[in-house]
Length: 396
Image (tube, rainbow, N blue to C red; front, side, top):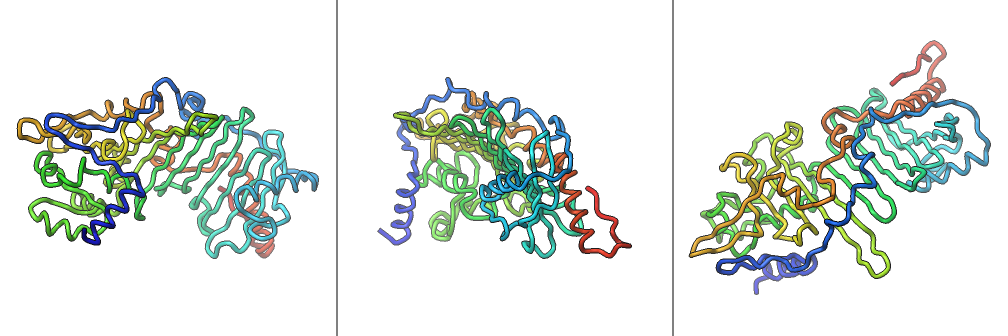
């Protein structure tokens, strides 16, 4: 066994990669199947998923001093986000007051950036963390982590402004969580599933390529495979996408995942659906994803969870890799429409929420009450640094 073969075998073991076994006339798919269909993962979060930031009911703000003991209680939110008062954040609040009749403080993040400014707004039920450019306070990053009275925890992060490529939202309650991530795959591993499970089997690359007309996608250095199979197109994921569209820099991936924590004798459960687009622009243009991957859905995992768009067929026709098989001496396969693939997830919400999608399509804005607090804090900080004649402040 060559060194390369040993490396591949080791990777397969540590990732529990499962390759479909193809037999004459049938497919031997994974046997294990978790029944999620009777469990409505997104029902507790239905209202949150269907509301954009603009549609939320926003709360009134008042600026006033609050007691030292209340201030110290709110310091705990800084530690919750991995910070340290007096080190990563100012010890004295820039502003304080009430938000929806609950205490808040706004702490500066001193010396953290050269060209940026930042504030963290701490509340009794969480925090808002904002960083913006000094010369443009409408561009930067935004993060919130809040816990509602019913125990629902919401985490949301995105870039501010219209040039927003990465969005993440996680909603959790009672051991169930639903996460959404949309981002460009700029680092190895972010597109792991699409690079490692693109074909039903690495033993039938040539057969798969000839039967489907699709390029073979492999992870890492494929030079040896290219030498072995010079007659079929083989490349890494990024190069494959770039060959399809010369404007592509990095592929864009949208991931929705539902999880249920282990409880008593019941194991943890998870199901995932991922969509791969050639680029962010392709997603914004409502084009069909080039690949769709599901895991923990319909008994699928690894190679059996991959669907790839057959563009030469027209419409949203995807090859179901789990059905790739040999019949009567020929390799054949079944297909599904995108809606049929999404239906496999059952009760799980298979699309980005309105808020997450709006952040990508239209850009992220600060909630009005948070913008009011942030703007006032920046104005106070600016007045400390400017001459009296220049103290005009900034407004968002």
